[in-house]
Length: 620
Image (tube, rainbow, N blue to C red; front, side, top):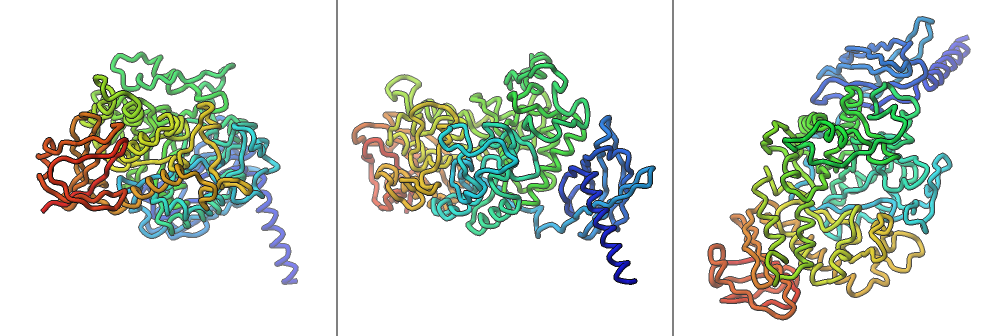
């Protein structure tokens, strides 16, 4: 009789579990943690007629503050309070309705990692290696195609799936570490179950799930742990502005204002007039047209003014930081979501993680526009941001123009770069800006420089020694190019050696050209030296106006003095040292970081053509 009762009990529990699965299609966040700074949690619960059920919780320290119903009966938004003394465990949420139907959902409350709130995000002591995962390395061919995903493997198609995955990145963490990188920014790995051209990751169809063609959530956790073992911080690429057109909620909206222009018979695109957000004369029409328009026909614009959407996005960001032990976030299309929401979001992230860091993409060449988003900037319109780091597109553009234009023409050449760096007075903290030679949305650096190696060396010497946080796109270190077009598919070409059968392999240095190896060694030498050079991380900067094909910067603190000489002269040229007497003694020793040679300087210095110098200065 006892065994019969136990069997019936098991069957009953199984029926409840199956019933719960039938009733709840989605619940997010997938889990939460005790001991968070903000004690409230809002659960999004989605299921057929779920609003007809009333949730109850009987767990010490956990209580339901409010149950929010919206116009769609398939949703509930449950406000939960988690007291500070609450212990981790499994919270049973009991759902009941008037028909006396009952089911239980077991929700996990976990214990946070030790000192999670104190985690140190990426900063100016780091260099980020940026990877487009589909194009980096195919470590697990078994996930190249997944039956429930329409966009299948086609390596011949520049806009198709090529098969790179999380396993491929894990297998090559040694390479990334040996280069001298200390952080890893990966283009979005979350699910993009779109019919086509979904390899890039920015048309998200599930904000809490890794795309099966890249791996699983558990694979992402493994990547995080392995990266940490290699001394590499994991930086997640996130999107708050939009989702993919095939996201599950697009077929069953919670509310009429979940997505901007939700009921419009045609797609209303963003005007991309980001300046309107700061323009003192801006028309409301231009502000709305920019912020509310869809980024693309397959990228619906999320309405962060809806409080449930806002809570969802904030909690999802925090969830990933805790879940995957992140060392940073790169936020896509920073100025496109509702700007007031972005202030709230960035403040909440800082409150939960005061030492964390987030970099926002503001693709503007105007430093006034970029600076308006940085934490500490006093804006005339009263707007307050809590974002520390922005991508420094003004310096990126100025560097390329400086390297490509004639030094003998007035206001051309290095003067372009000097003038842009001189604009740093407009930023609250220029040392927090992210500087870069290229990224996944622009032509490769070596292509932009017309495949001139001297220019490449000058550019990399500048980026790895000046103020800011450097980021390098995969393959830039081996002079990857996009000679045929600036199409994204060509820019994001496959890393040599990432696929079985590749003739060239950067990871094993097989069939690499001498130029590729020289460039890789040049970049790696600077990166490894930079790791332990405090003057580069946080030292002061002093630069001298370009003259005679030279542009000279100094980075210095109480312990170190670094002299960086950028040089575009096409023949050996003498640099007169007298102009630097305010920071240099007449006689000093200098160590050339690239050649590792030390020499004495007494007077002027003759420098080889098209050759930058990075010198550590020793003065008696």
